[in-house]
Image (cartoon, rainbow, N blue to C red):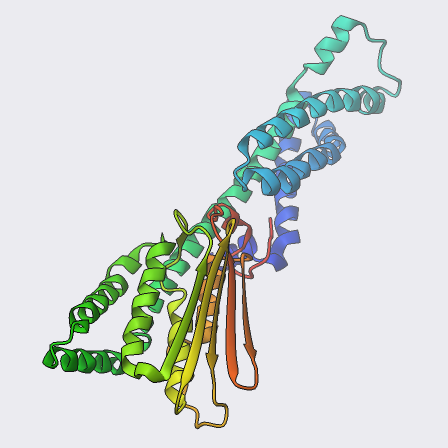
Amino acid sequence: MTGLVKRIIFQQRYRLLRHILFWLIYFIVFSLESAVDLGSFKLGVETTLIFTPVNLLYTYVILFVFVPHFLVKEKYLKFLFLYGLWCIVALFGNFLFRYYVVIPFRTGRPGPPLGFGSAYRMIFALGSFIVMNTVAGFSVFIAMFKYWYREQREKLEIEQEKTKAELELLKAQLHPHFLFNTLNNLYSLVLERSDKAPDMLLRLSGLLNYVLYECRAPEVPLEKEIRVMLDYIALEQERYGTRLEVSTDFSGDVAGKMIAPMLFQPFVENAFKHGTAEQLGRVWMSIELSIKDNELFFRVINSVDWKAPRLPVRGIGIANVRRRLELLYPGRYTLQQDTGDEVYIISLTIVLGLSAPIRHWLTPVADQSLSI
């Protein structure tokens, strides 16, 4: 029973049924209320029927225009201003409707001549106007509750996905093969009393600390993410030595920019594992990151020998990275994969710095489409 109720409330295919039920409840409640006030059940039903089109128009303008375009986008002043204007329009529209439709319908003749005082009293006879706002208020409450519920579900899903990604990154990106090779290189440098050993140990320690502890935050400074990526590259370069050439190009102002942790790591690790590691002789890799306004562009290009035997693909994979991006930056990213004769290219563009929580309310949990 609970599952059926949730499906009716949230799923797109039950949208028409939800609206029918809402207006059916409205019709029953206000018919009974009007019947009590007018002393006749027939008059109560007639009154509710007459005012239903007006209430539909008033409610749906608020529900489908003001709420999604202003309220859920946190444009509160614009929402209040437009809602106030709509109330004024509705107040006078309600007066005209009662004077030119309801009174002639009830009495069979046009409304009586109006002076200033009688018109004023009729305009501010607020009974039907209060009913309009009551109906609209309930519909907005229901819609906002659904948005809130979806946000909580998506937050939980993002947290679960993040936790899963962190565990997978420990197993895949910082897998034992990488750690053992790094430790062996570090051991050799220590035996040789190389000046590189302390720096290499510091990089490895910082990388592990970042993955284990700092990645728990929903967002991290972009500068920190870049430093960790460069530390990872430096450690891998120690493994491949002079046969690997890595070029980096970072541009734009990254100060103050925040991003979800470990977004770049899978792409860089993938370039090493399925590009550099599978080739003999000299290999190369190019990493580019740029910021323009709030748009981040990241690209990894690596040399590939398509004729070489391919290693089995493991780790979180591009599909899972795309899933994480969809959860964290819905509608705000593009991810492209391209191949050439001897190159593999992956490009990522993200729009940063937008407020996401309320916007996420627009995406239903069940079928990922807007449904009020």
